[in-house]
Length: 523
Picture 1 (cartoon, one colour):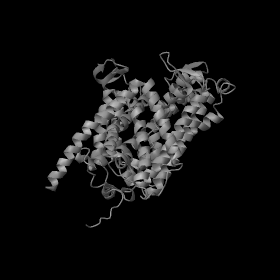
Picture 2 (cartoon, rainbow, N blue to C red; picture 1 turned 120 degrees about the vertical axis):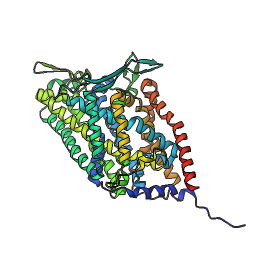
Picture 3 (cartoon, rainbow, N blue to C red; picture 1 turned 30 degrees about the vertical axis):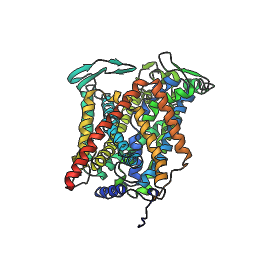
Picture 4 (cartoon, one colour; picture 1 turned 90 degrees about the vertical axis):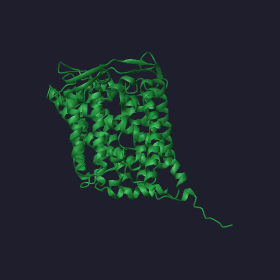
């Protein structure tokens, strides 16, 4: 009887891994360290940092816990980025997180991530940022408004389904969402003309909004000191309501502990710091990826989180907690400014009057433009990778023959995003996936542990700092937040879970069709 030498699975990388590496060679490597880092920062910074601190302040009702919420977000974001750095350097493939889930946990998990990304996460975020762009453009052109309808189709009334409230939205084309659609179409077409073209736009607008945030912090330090705000937020009041034994009302008379309310508060801050993983989607187009991907993730998240925390200290430096919490309504120079949670606008108005509000509107538009460019550029690479696997429309895997960009994928993403723009549903959809986004982050970092065990000898140019302690802490923290959201915000968590689960039958149908197609080709 002959003997057979078996190679244990832990000592080799899958053949699929090698296959996808060769497929990715058709893409152009046009992103250096600077462009990759700008993509990380530009995708993270949208409109959230200028707005969500008002909602967080209402939830925590404490200066210390407002900063604490951003510190928790900062810790989780940087730990997540350091963990993803190992996976990115190990598998610099188009599709990034989709590929990591596919290789570590199986194709179903990769598909569910890509399915949710296309249906809601990426496209919904692009739509929401686009509409925010239109909203602030309306400051200069009042005819651009959500109530200025070009074609109002219908209004969907609110419907209560158990703990969830669905509907309550207008469907149609207004001048505001038309602006969003024009922005999405313009950036999608521009990104067909090469990865370097998209990177140039990303670098310019990211540099502009980083400068705007840095300028906000500097101006707040030197010009924004407000005696009323300092007395209310710092002089003996900073730790107000921040003890572990304190109870917080999160609405409806529901009282929760300090740790629980911090978990609830992560909804806004985590989303404001999200999309840092988008650079992994473009990994096949990054030069020297084993070095530049981990570095860009660490540098990009570190700079943005530092700016975010600095901005929140400035908010506390300029506005009393009541001004931040109560819709960022302030009294300045005898004039009342009600800014509908636009905290940063209130800060600039406090310092410079109405001119400050206009300057902040410009800064937010620049931020939204750059953010959408990064999201559009990166997201298309995931659907391209799925199509290569036979888990999305085959045509989506086609590249533009001249510029070697996933043009069909960019167009598919553009069309669905435009539908979300006019559907009026994107804000609800974003809320619905808060739970799901964290689940996929947890699963991806679990995949880091799995790949360490199943492929211990695979080449790892960079190893996650703090492994296994820091990734394990991330998993525990993210699961705790998800459990809290599941318990206290079911109207957000259950729809997100349903969207993910609906992907299972779709995956089964698509994979079966793909197998049939491959079988017919082979015969």
